[in-house]
Length: 113
Length: 112
Image (cartoon, rainbow over all chains, first blue to last red):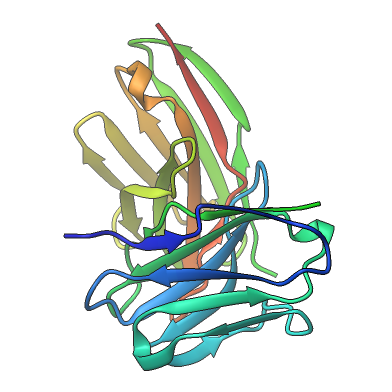
């Protein structure tokens, strides 16, 4: 069974540029999460989807971050414009319905110069 | 707000020794407590979890204990091996939510 796939794995951009990350969850997983992981820290939730609906985006900085999950499968996370403080790893995770194991992708490491 | 404290931040043990990592949570409504292992350049991976209706769970060399009264839970790794070296995260999830509150992580080094 294929795991959660994220791309790109690494991205280096200059500040004020836009960037987008893509996630393909495990087939059949209704719940999709985007997490932010700063160096030496645990993951912090940005947004959670149930199918195509964003049910928790309270931690998403909406002035520069946006996300979508069209057709309830793949998802993209966009930052525009990027700031120096956005340098981090962006993790996507999926899970079947209910509280339980999160299946994480390998993450997209963003460096903003 | 909800908070999970994790200690120690780094831990070095000799191969074959035991390792213990402790977490304390603030929300008494938490009822699900997973532990994740994150290797360099990889995403976190679940290694064991426990729900609030049990006090202990074991899976081969790994065990988790839960003390709901004191609001803390611990990860125990016995007979450590070099491949156990990684960063470990605990998390607590309050009942009725999907809010995974992660600890700050423990970097475990197993010395051969």
